Image (tube, rainbow, N blue to C red; front, side, top):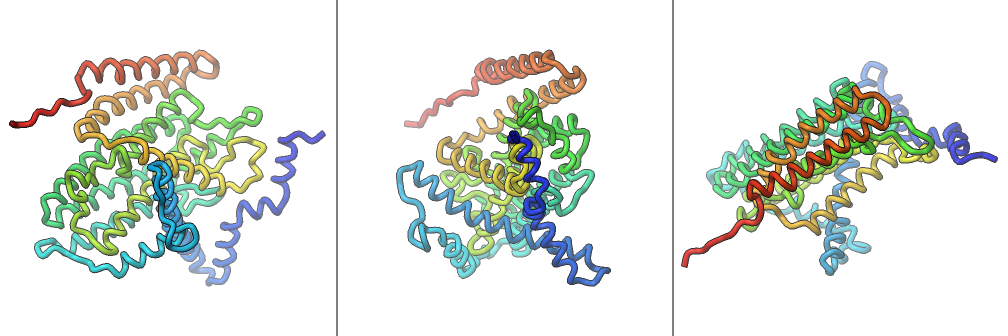
Length: 406
């Protein structure tokens, strides 16, 4: 009798499934063959860039429909259902409206910086996709320090946000930009440190190497980092920081329309505003892809007998799963106050992340065995209780009482 794992191995040996897994790599190599030999490396990079620029904005368009329909379902109302079948042509209508809408620039604004801000945001976010392994042999640039490059590109988004707020010559825009920069810098520290634990175990800053380090199975179950105490704690902190970095609810204070009109992009209209909208969703895609790569095995199958499924399907399936979690959170959780957000970053997530680095070191040097599971779990559970239940209450970070003048 052929076992399930044996059947999967037979499927993997089938050239049809191999070609399906590498279909985009084969397509790129076929197209590159039409170019002169001298420029084929450059042509391959250009084709990879074109693929990224086409695929992720397409996912952005679909995600906006799914989000609006999902939020409509959560709030017991209808989502978009007029433009096209089931409303799926709504992104096309929105794009046409953005392209044809008047581009209004304030008279006192710095026109050059005002124009460059959304471009800087979108370009830097797109640069981050260059080092994400989206499938087997599907990474545009395989850098030894790919993770460092990803965070370097992500740091440039704070500059674009500040450029937008400062160049608008609007107090609301400036206040929104300062709040956004404070939030993004605070949680970027946590985001980076949460990834350091993975680097300590994998021993590499290369994202394909991190995926390869998780390519192990016990029976049918994978050895992903999320299935360890330090990996689970690191991912939870990573997910919180990624939500704050992408300005998603409940951390969407930079776009607090109830206090700041629309935040740092108050003075933007037309296609410039659409670029900010696109950049926010692209950042959500890239951070989801990074989280999948660091903690969920990247393009690896969740069970060994499913390895015959093309690797790129697993990567994009995992990314879209996290996108739907983002949408679920937006429809469920209320927005935090600014003081709650900053206290949570510096007085809970940062100390917890630093402790998780020590736990990761213990895990690394205690060797194989059940003892490290017990020790690491007890330390992290005790830290959660101390930081989350005792210390935060002792510091009186709970609900605030408001008093109004009579």
